[in-house]
Length: 318
Ligand code: SF4
Ligand code: MG
Image (cartoon, rainbow, N blue to C red; front, top):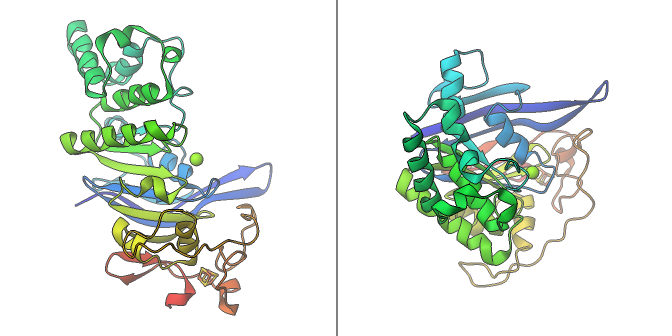
């Protein structure tokens, strides 16, 4: 069952008068109810912009976002807008920056409930906040404190509690563990997994590193310079990456291949990430691709399903 359908989504930013930054340039994918979809790519590839355009924080330049059969980025009733806002919540890489330093933790958590009128009395509000604090591994007393009094991992727990407070269906997590110590990362991922099981949540989990999404994702999408280059189930992607960029990313993970136990040969990409203001013609990855051919500079590769549920954009599979 599709919860979210992204169709040819585009988000271009005006830089100065003329130049347009093509942060997201025509990507399509679906997210199924109850799954975790990992979205991966180097910084600047547009993955955060995808998340923000889905929740309509950025207005899409083109394409469609369809949530439970309804278009998000289109004129609709106030009621619908409110419902979308409630159904889709975000958690961020830097929970501190997203937590108001002058509000107590309990007021931060309750803010969405206040906006959406999700309680009938102050007693009910307090009870719900206390329950949320427990659910994320904090306690009542923590509710009276301020964000700066907490560690990074605890702040992320507060961010998660705030997202959960309005009973969302989709949580867009934008690099939620990237800023945390390695020892804390697993704790936050495990908490997210537990909450997913208990509450039937669906996640879009954004990360810059394939090793971070590996354990949490059912399917993974790989972005490069505003384009999606490959989508497959997590298992298949790690076992048999088809796109040269995915292959290079995987080769950079130092762990041995989970299936063969062999270490992959390291593929070092040449050159720098080109500017999205003036991306290469044809395949955007061609300036760094070890397998580039003549056609790659001339024709943008088609987004094609080369195996069951395994999509790739690369002329090697034409
Ligand atoms: Fe490399 Fe060409 Fe495939 Fe692009 S289309 S990834 S340049 S082989
Ligand atoms: Mg980002």
